[in-house]
Image (tube, rainbow over all chains, first blue to last red):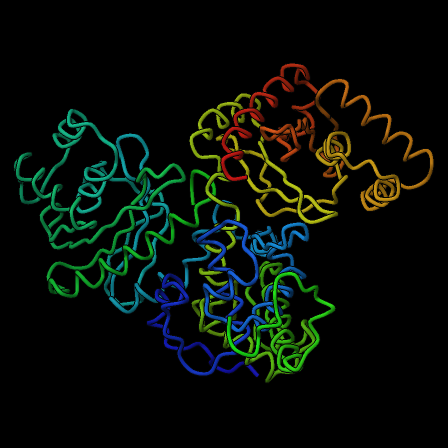
Length: 276
Length: 276
């Protein structure tokens, strides 16, 4: 009975990242399961202890349903209940269930189907790069199955400020102006640009949150990049979509950037240690 | 509060909740329990599972399993793998599981100093917190940066008095009621007068010394030093442990190791205290 029961695969990003209260749920779903997830997400966002009536009011739930869901979540160790204050709070039950994802490598495993689908849909090669001193090193990549596509080896490295990812690191990577100038001089551009012109582009990246390079760093290669934050909030990694120059118009690149921003934020949320 | 639910308040205990809504509620709760069973199975699985496996192993009918997995898929708590025929924990679930740990559990600004301690001993630093009445759970791990290193996941559970870490809870946790204490010892494998007396003697020694240590107490080949972490009111908030390969442990100066564990505990407690 292995039926194809996944709703639209193109909605994987939304299903993973849109707050449940705002998610348009396709097809038939079991209300108690959806409501329980809504309750848990609410606790994850708000964190303080709360009484049942407060939770029911905030989520607009009938108190009797809210009570039975809370009680079940306590029995499943997802929430804890303090009889003295009659309040509920998050417990560690989800961490116990999801422990295989709460270890280095877990973040990549969790986003793998999302990035696989995205790579195929946009006919792009998606790459996670991480800073290693003066370079960016490939952590992992998702190819798209096309006969001709960009390929990059795991472990390959490029200069810190190369291409679109370099503009992201310049904008969000906590680099001093002197460091930017030093790293910039190491770049070998296909279509050279001045440091001042490049800095103006970096300012634009700060404003909109993502960067692109349309064949200026490497001829024939177009990239869109977003930052991925580490545990301390610094951007130390980049998620990039790389395609052939001219393959996507500006609107399509903007669409890709929007999706990368969502998955990049998700990756940041999922990181446990220094890596992924 | 909605009409018809005016009787339901936080002050009413579960047993008093039997009412006209009971039947509807029970069916919702049954679905929720099934969803929890699916998530637990997928969380424990090393590999993604087919629907037929999930139904068999959770004891559900195929159609019921299909409904539950479909619902979980629609809200991103499970996701299909790239092949589309097998299922695994979804990215939303992994993010919620990470969020239940809270940002402070990830130790924020204390992390670089903790990594330095981990590197000094090629060890794994871990925070364990109480999880319900009878369990411990690891909520934060800091690994050394050595190429070959010990790895222990976040979300790993132990009996409350299990291993060296459990002895810290036995010594400092304020669990003095004899029946409960015996029960917790039995859960950790200490039964019989001699074993219980030896365990209690070790707890007294640990308390006098300020830290607990041992080799292969819970995991073969691993040596551990564990110390209590106190909240500002002096209550036990968790433990900080330094775990390393047994051979390294045998050669390590225990006093220096314990000093580092105490320093790590102070750093961790300062940061984690912000969450409590």
